[in-house]
Length: 287
Image (cartoon, rainbow, N blue to C red; front, side):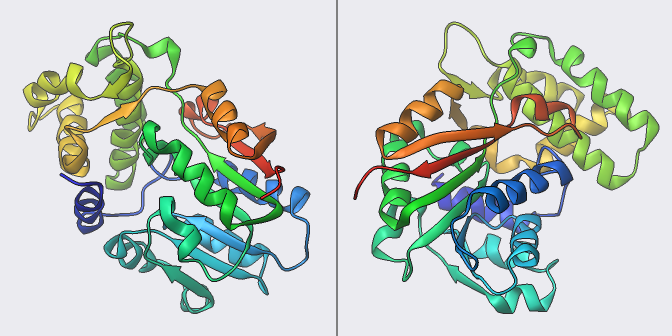
C-alpha cells in the first residue's frame, strides 16, 4: 500500500481525537509560543505541514492577517479534517495538494514559518534529506521550522501487551465515552509502538502485539474494547513500520540541511507528552 493510499483510507475513517493522536491544548500553545517569540515579521507566511485542524485554527487566530498555507498530498484528508473548521478559517487558507518532499517547485511564496504535528514522524528516515532540503529551499532567510516530534518511550520497550493496556483500561474506568475510548486506543497505539523497540530491529511496528490484539478483538471486556478500536481506527497502518530515531538524529539531520536547533518545549497534559517535544529550528545557512 502506498503512502497516499494509506492516508486516503485514514481520511475515510477520520474523526477528531484527543492526544496523542492529535496535538493537545499544551502542544498547540507550544506551537503558538514558538512563533510568537521567534518569527521575524508582523504578517508571516505560515505553512502548515498536514491538515491538523486545531493547528490551522490557532495559526489563523494568532495571525489573522497572515497568509496561511496548508500543504498535504492527500486531498481526501484535507476535506475530512476541514469539516470541523469554521468557514472563515477555511476561506482564508490556501491549500496545496503536494508532497512535502517537492514543495520548492510548487509553492508560490517564501515561507516564514513551517509548522507540523508529527510531520517528520511520517516521513521515511531515508527521505529526511529531501524533507529538510525542500523546507530549506522554500523558507525565507532565517525562517522557522517548528515540529512536534514523537520519540519512543524507553520505559515501555519490551513490555507485554496487557501491561501496556492496563493504564488505558484504568483511564476508561473513569470515562468510557466513545470519544475517550478513541483517545485511549490512540494512546495505547503509541505505547505499543514504543513497546516494540528492541535491540534486534531499527523499526517500530505493531507486529509484536498483533496476535494479542486479534485475540482480544470483539471480547466484551475493557481490553477487548480497546483492541477492537485499534484494529478499526488504525486498520490502514497495522502492517506499517516506522524508523526508530531519537532527538539527536533530528537535530543532526536538520543541521546538515541548513536548520539550527533553537529550543524545545514539552507539554504536560497527556502521558506521552514527556517524549513528544515541540522542536524549533531556524534556517541559517545561505541558499
